[in-house]
Amino acid sequence: MSTYANENILGRQRAARLIEDCAATGNLPRLVREIREMAADGGGVSVGFMFEIGERLTAGECK
Image (cartoon, rainbow, N blue to C red):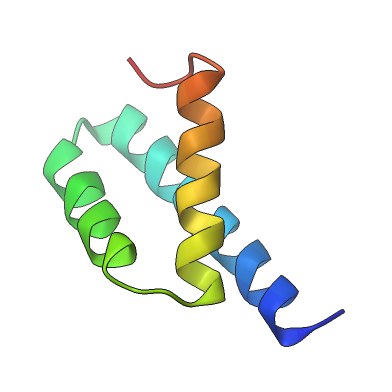
């Protein structure tokens, strides 16, 4: 598997953990801060992160 693919997986995992943490703690500012930071980066981790957020949003997991 390529480095980019591995980074993408790491980004998806990071987003999933942050979403779960936000749901458990209600710490939305932390999630928003991470989204902003990831959106400013163009690497594989940030792309995976943003795709995970997008997929969960379109699946109705985030309200």
